Length: 459
Image 1 (cartoon, helix red, strand yellow):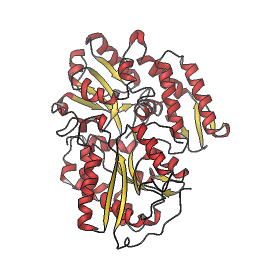
Image 2 (image 1 turned 135 degrees about the horizontal axis):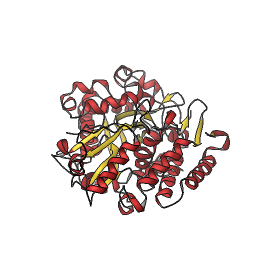
Image 3 (image 1 turned 60 degrees about the vertical axis):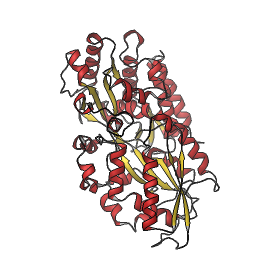
Image 4 (image 1 turned 180 degrees about the vertical axis):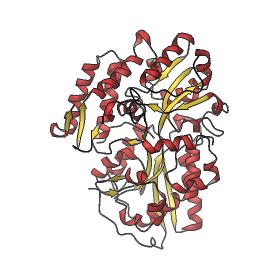
């Protein structure tokens, strides 16, 4: 069973991959008779007020299908659950032909797990009949949904990560409002200055611990780890092994220990840091009220602040500064970011995969994706999205899209979700007072148990 956890992953697009089931032969057109397709996606009402953009998106697809494929009807299955719970519910649904949806929203890092479980249909033959895919979708976006040489999904948006900072807080702390840190030391120095000069303000947020799932793993741990000398990997693609011990891993845990040290706390208190809705607290409460100085977070967060977002904040464009995340000592390549995002896949149990692919083609057309990516705060996955005015006019799109030139991805292997949980546990352990050496040792032992001794290495 898949272990619940994680998310990741949009741009400041805000003002605004075997196994896996039988291969179906792509047809020019789906059957002409009436077809009802089920579509499952997340609709997390506890994460904030409406609009819930995947819900809006699929209701719009219902209307478009009535005009373009009148024989196809969509039965929408919005799943009201947090990300970890959504993963669990989808896992359970995909196990049975009686409950598996035809089309399912997949966090891209879980595609490998679901392919191994036999849940997803390979889309290679279908994609070969859709010239737009090879031409317009960024190569990296085609690669992220590929597992064991086959493609199992179509990305509908991506993201990257950066350093956000509140200029009002920086002014009060005597820090420059145009700021680009060049090392971890620069970030820590700024955080300490905020702590000393702006009482009542949290200096630095770097998500940590189990409750925030993949946000902890990706926004914080991997953003640090991949910036250590040598780009210390979590998984070595050359040796095909998980790296369970390295100087980079130790340095990463030391950074987390430093900022969560209760004797000189730079990060949020545990009631915030270990809350399942910490992300909501950060973006909807602390940043808009000038109560947080620095936030290592996603490119998507301004979608919360735009008109129609969960917490409209018109002033964000002047208050919030943005910077690239530096490597540990500023060593080449100097900066680091990671990209993730969500995809839509076809269940291996679908009785109408041809029709399902026609729906995915429509849903992932240029104009539909551009509007969706603007609404959600995604970075576009199609090159031609920039031709759509609503997308091209977004602030910071050049900056966040530029980060994709050096972005990295999580290892898309079945073991990753469980290993990611162990990352979160190691982070929480050092937050709670465990020594870095003990937390690292526990991580090494746990991951060796998950991946197998023959599949891990130390450095």
